[in-house]
Amino acid sequence: MWQQTDCFCVILSAIITGSLSVSWDMKVSPVVSVPRGEDAVLSCSFTHPRQQDYSGLITVKWIARETNALPFFKCSVRNDSMEELKDCSGSELKHSLRGDPRQGDLSLVIRKVHVADSGPYFCRVELDGWRQNQQGETRLRVTVKPQILSLSVVELSSDSTTRRLQCEVEGNPPPSITWLSASRGLLTDQVFTSEVNLEKLYSSVPYVEGEVFTCRVENMLGGAERRYPADNTLIITLSVCGLIVLLLLCAGIICCRRRRVLSRRLQVDGELQLVYTTVSPTTQHESLKSSNSRHLEEEGVVYSPVNVQ
Ligand SMILES: *[C@@H]1O[C@H](CO)[C@@H](O)[C@H](O)[C@H]1NC(C)=O
Image 1 (cartoon, rainbow, N blue to C red):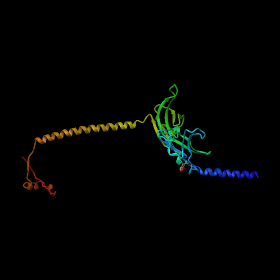
Image 2 (image 1 turned 90 degrees about the vertical axis):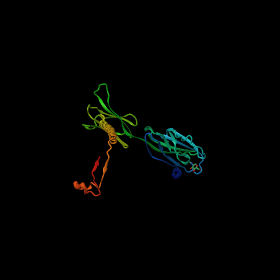
Image 3 (image 1 turned 180 degrees about the horizontal axis):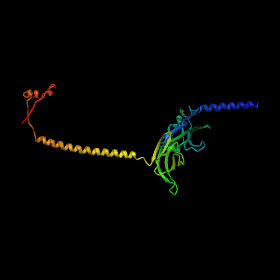
Image 4 (image 1 turned 30 degrees about the horizontal axis):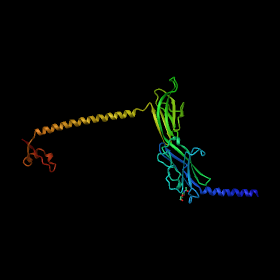
């Protein structure tokens, strides 16, 4: 008998909680990836069974990292009010709501994200007279393209025998770092890598004078590499090209000037020595025919000697 009542109660509570959880609905995007420095939108929306006639207070809370932590963002609005969402939004704020909670939109905007903003976020809504509140979890990933910030020789102790070549790297997810040497290929011995902060790493190898090293970094967003000593061929090529262009330019200018001077002189000469001639095409034609038969093969061309007076 006792067992039957227990069983009945369990079924009843299952039906009640079941119907409640079915009628509440909360949608969040499980993972949001955003490049460092851009704005992130953590989308979150909800529906509830009494929304047809609900006029009470809607309280939105956003919590970071731990579900039981205090909310870093909280704002409330009455559903029957027409007021602006002053506390909830503002373009100059680090955190603000993108939409209107009265329409079931709880999405949060985080401006200019840092790597430290990464992690789990919980979106929560509380309604008047509702003991149960709803919560959804989303995870923010702030990404950084891998880059080599510096590559230099450092002396780790006072005696200069322990010199190491150090590569300062940034990237998120933390990039893999590979060392190559021109003579020995891939370096795996005595490679020390340490994390400076969430997005920055130091990696170093023993430095050998005269050896050419390459530090290479890679993560899912891309890769980068740098050589030590720095590869100067590009700079040399560029400066040689620049020099050639400069020389050509100079030569061009000199040429132009000369030509201008020459043509001016020719103009002057032409004006001074005007030559007048009389051209008589018909009379001299016969004599020309006999002297130059090759030219006569060309049709319609009339050759005539010119008498200079
Ligand atoms: C607020 O009220 C409107 C109109 O009655 C309703 O459509 C909406 O779903 C309500 N919002 C919430 C969150 O209950």
